[in-house]
Length: 322
Ligand code: ADP
Ligand code: TRP
Image (cartoon, rainbow, N blue to C red; front, side, top):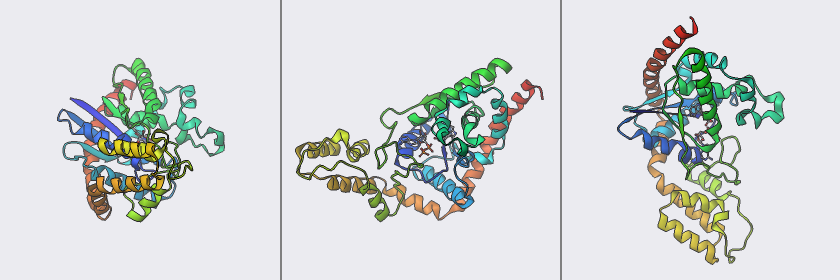
């Protein structure tokens, strides 16, 4: 039996990149009968960037509603909020003491922001250690993530190795699972879609706003008549990832033949998203109107998660000398 674990920060409402790169593949894995999954909302990580409590709370519920609306089975699996598990911050301290400073200095999550070093807090610097604690606390076997998290997983493995060499084999080195097809979904500006770049497609938005986001995908300025290159167009790239093959073959031909404008392609992408995700959109909105239901799910998941966490921490404390 394999244990699968992954987390998503509550730094915004999950976008199409989060859904295709992390949530959907993770749920697929969780449905295999032999797997047990621990999926959580990384709301401790979120406060490295979010300071408004109402925003944090809203995003946490929205992230939970996204997982649930895509069908995550919380009876078979474990669904929780990171901040409900105090054990994770205790393990983080122990792991801090097994993490070399130069390793953290090389983390992308820190390096990307270090040009603005005066804005970098220690939480951002030690972000990968908290992430390692999230994973190692449950002896997870596999961690499904997008490509941008690969380095964090390598660091987790290194931290586990160092800790084990000091105290004995207590921590399992996890294996990342990176879905090649969905590893990097482009945003409306062509860069990686991210909650922090203001380039997201949020499939849960009301139709009018969603249409506006899709219409804002950047394209070149070729005329309607000109033939176009589908492989250099983000509208097509996203369409191809989520449409039935026959439909994307047709759109590819339309691009190459010309007399087909980007506006038409965007309208097709909009219709596809509305139809493909109509159930999920409905469920998401129902859940956002029933926060008590979400709260109950998270609380009962936290109980199950803490049992596993406390069990491992007990052993760790003894080995360290407490
Ligand atoms: P964001 O960059 O939007 O803040 P997170 O860091 O919260 O996203 O990522 C949550 C999960 O979604 C991670 O597993 C991450 O690798 C994945 N992910 C984020 N953006 C994308 C993307 N554009 N394409 C594919 N996967 C993504
Ligand atoms: N850092 C991850 C991200 O931004 C979120 C995360 C926190 C995570 N803890 C984790 C992902 C543990 C996988 C496993 O996407």
